[in-house]
Length: 592
Image (cartoon, rainbow, N blue to C red):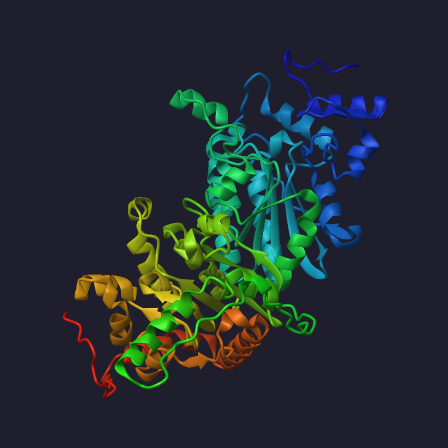
């Protein structure tokens, strides 16, 4: 006997299944083209004609991500049905029964254990075919149970979300899952277990506003729509037309909410790299350093003064300024490309935006799993504009804070390669709290319970530099500079004329040699005789050797002791400092 359904209620899953079964074709909901089902499946459930990523069931996700399709399902608790006796156009109990019949599963969450890149992990997946992956009591209980399993086994936890949000049919009981799942995530963080969230299409509502936005790493699947309120709701409430890319994966990346946007085909490889570093897996012996100095970049300037006159002294100081700023010196991304293996850039401050001027990520620095941050200046007009000449906004510094905390959580060394003329000075920065962002970054760096090595590779300009330079060891390249203000600005303010910039540079004692004399840095890294910009190979080798040596020494100290030692080091700085000026004849005394 046929079971009658309420008018207007359709099972889209059943209709799709019958169409595929009979015709072996499926219609892409994005481009409207028919796709041969075998091609659709072979292409990871992505339309081969327009690239639209169809939703995937938990089983399909498990087969995609676990090594060799080998995994074991975790049995999850199932809550009692419909305690509120809810009914809209049809009783909630009937909706549950229909969803269970269509999917063969008791509720929307599936979880399994297996290996990803040889690393044991727990993966939980929200099933979009079960009431659009909505979160009710059973989903909440399942998330809590799978997280507790991950903690018990001490293995990373990966959550893949596709959800319309909290389940309306359970009302306040579903709302409480936001708090319950967050409490479970807190336990995961306290246990220092890696938590990676993959945000698939669509992920909205109470899911994004709880466990889905609390990961150590957020990966948005290419093409995913992610947000709190739906686009249509916002447009109706605000009476405005939203941008076409609103709430897309790329939009969320630009606004600082996700670390990366990944295609489905690259997802497993990205996870393997991330898991390898966060779990501090040993890696192969690093390959020999190989860095070719771009021929177009080689040029030098030589001082014409040889004797230690006053003019020679001030020319020498300002010459260091010019060398530190030389546009052909290696920059952050050059060091990453040559010295770091399995590099995964991480993005976003989780508050407002992504600032490319402040780069950061995880990888193996000459074989050491590390978190690495630093400013990137850019090499040509386009990249200099993109990176804002290495001058970071509040978003950049808040991203640096987030990566510092990531390093501490997994006891990964933090390596900072700083090179900036200063923090970005502009209206937007002031509006979003530039001073607070810099101050909080200094505070975060000082209290980290993990080894922290900072290297001045070029310009160390004011608060923009020291924000990421409060290391256990502060190293400085031979031709780098470090100062509270640029010598040109100092001359303009104090000498009241920019032409006294050389005198200002000399008086400020901003060279590596000067800073070592007053105890503001711990070590000077030699440069090639004509400057770092003339020999990238030697420069890379010298920096790599110095950083590795200092990191390994710090790793011998209990991590819990490092914050106090670091604080005492900075407390001692500038006490009883006396600098003896060189006894030379002055040619043109500066009037201050």
